[in-house]
Length: 332
Length: 246
Image (tube, rainbow over all chains, first blue to last red):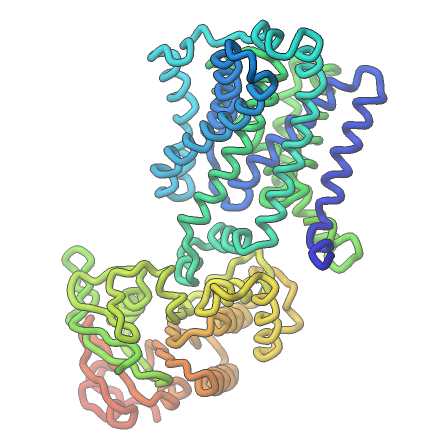
């Protein structure tokens, strides 16, 4: 029980997710919006583990989601013939998604994590595009034709269960992944990993001299963040929509969205990705309804203003404002 | 056996020999001043001792162990601490967290968890009188406070050897006296060898040193007990023929 107060900051995060779930369950027509918001929160939360805590921006991040999507797709399409596996195929799919995104992150990390700051960002920019062209060009995993596995999912789970998985349980799993990512973030913050990451984010050379094996901690954060992305891809992009096409899952657009969410909410904070995900998702959704076609035109200056006014993000600003008050320990 | 031993260490940057065949010994608990004008190779020498650079020639031995090619993050847990000429705080972390990082990855790091490290940080904060700033982000401190915090952070590592790079530059003479006597007291209590590097022969620092090493253009020209060193004609020459202030 002594450990409990340390994990109190998870309360507002979980509360936000529960509220989103309740709105989706009880309000007509809200499911789709909530599921989009949850995806953005989960994306931000997973991305934040590496980008927020180390300060390194990985422009190829979406490739980890892509790998996760392929992991699940491969498991379903290749194992569907083994009927006795049943629902375990999905479980194996999650495991494969994690393994594949972890392996990719190790390969990328081994090269790119030797570089610093902007050089790291530039080195990672090509990862998603390179992977897409590799899959298409070398005709790996059906190449550019992609995989459609709605029928396989029906065979494995039965038509009704498969439909429930796509339209309901996949979204619940996204929620679970978002909560998992938040828990991992706070766990890191409360252990030596978090202190080491903060130190290396602020001053890598000083951190080394202080006895911190910066490479080790960067790799820990990178792999954690990538495997969470793998799970998210397997859920939101494979189970929710049972098909995969290379151009869709290696689209850099999602990396950019992850960066915006993390920066908007507050990079390196626990609450940041939730706030950023909500603000970004809601504005994107409503702007596209009320001012279709203009949403980016309006959104760009809004982001600019927020970044200029609150360089530490919304949560970073709240953290500074609530210093010394009772709310302080909830805003982390 | 000396705590730290350098044998014929040479470090070059291209054609420039920054440290030239330097040998020296530092004993346990000793207070040594390294003096030399700008560009004499002092900072490079520090960087060789704590592993930021590996020397082209020569060996570095710490407690009898050859550490010439050991990366810096493995030297800190052995007991080599360092402060920088311009303080390098982890700006967004609080003073308390900064100092706890020192404890967490220092000589006792393996046996300390986060809570234990924070406790050590609290004790040190009280000792260095930073209590009022404990929960401030380190980036918000004044330059003098940052220096103090950096010293506190390196003391939290419980080092056996502390390298101080121009620790007192830019400080008010009264603060220097106070700081130096504090460091000296802690070093004596905990048996820490201090190597303080200064550009000028500062009374406060050199006066307390047991031994003074003078560097000039990368080479060691004097290595003697303080009084002798300061009277050495070579030292006078290095500083443009002016006699050192007394």
